[in-house]
Amino acid sequence: MSDERDHVDRWLEETQLPGAVDLEVEGIVDRINGLRRRFSRMLDETLADFGLNDGEWKALGHLQLSGPPHRKPVGQLAKRADLSSGAMTNRLDRLEKAGLVRRIPDEKDRRSVQIEVTDAGRKLYERAVEAQAAKEGIVAEALDPAQQDKLNDLLRKLMLAFERREAQG
View 1 (cartoon, rainbow, N blue to C red):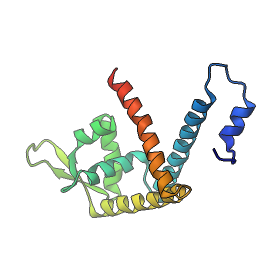
View 2 (view 1 turned 90 degrees about the horizontal axis):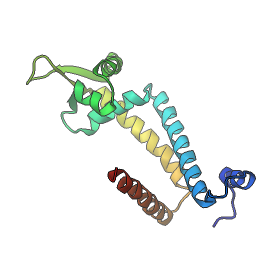
View 3 (view 1 turned 90 degrees about the vertical axis):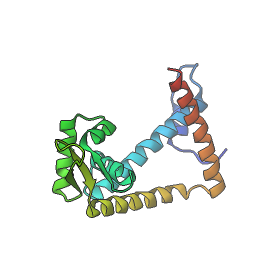
View 4 (view 1 turned 180 degrees about the vertical axis):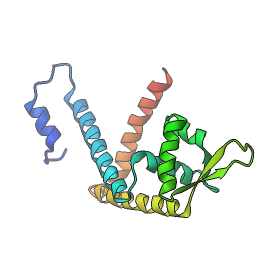
């Protein structure tokens, strides 16, 4: 255990929680939630630097990571984003206006269009990913490689416990 104390340690010391609350568990959960908020803020800042919002980022990512030809039907993008097709159309309109995606007539169904990421969209997405990865790397430098491995192992165990619980319904 480290001699250094963070705000969670101080909060746990100063707060009277009900007796059934395990302070170790509370510390784990509070730290994970605090890190999640900070990583989320960091990503929001990165996206703002590149003129994107979270939804636009996810749409570009879904197209980019789907592999060549980097195109998907609007309905599939909407389903992936858990949006109505109208809401997805508004998002795609903004991306198209910015030159990051284009609409391509669907070869199999003339009533439909496919959304394709443009070269500009691909480049912007890649630059944003690289910028965010650099920021995350700076944070991860607080741990040496062995500690990073160990932390990944421990977080994986927590994730698997959640996944098993969710699978049970």
